[in-house]
Length: 187
Image (cartoon, rainbow, N blue to C red; front, side, top):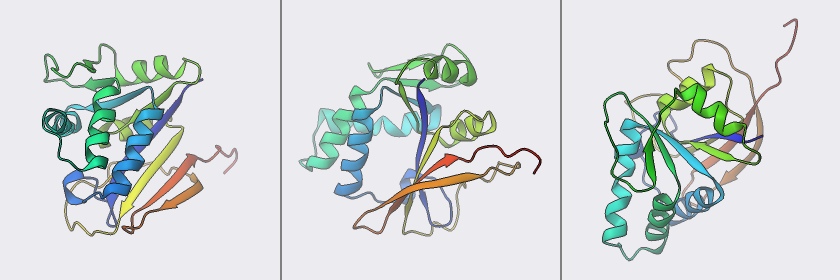
């Protein structure tokens, strides 16, 4: 069975907006390695269009090794984009989803040892509601955004998670790795 991993950057106040945090070399290196270990990443339209920034880094490298290597990893990983408004995508490693999120996620997860990353807030929320996420990797940056979309603000049902491990970065960012807790009967 494959593994569906929800990975997202967020602020201390729960805002998940890539423009509210400033990743350093260590964070870029971490995500570079994560992308290289994964088989595919799922994006919604907004996050996909934000990530297209990395195509410009491929065309004109910055000279910053961690950013340039992350751009190569981002370019290499297959991307499936879920959108109601895009007719096509022009990134060679990206395709528009032909099935619903649930159908696509289930089909990918049926493949042995497949590592499926989910990098968009909206998709994480939808997959959480469907109980299809196997692991959460929540990188919390030492920033208070004050405003913006909160990761779990649209979740109304109680969800229990089990902390599996943490990883601290010199910048003060910390990744919390969670797995869904086993469903308890009678509680």
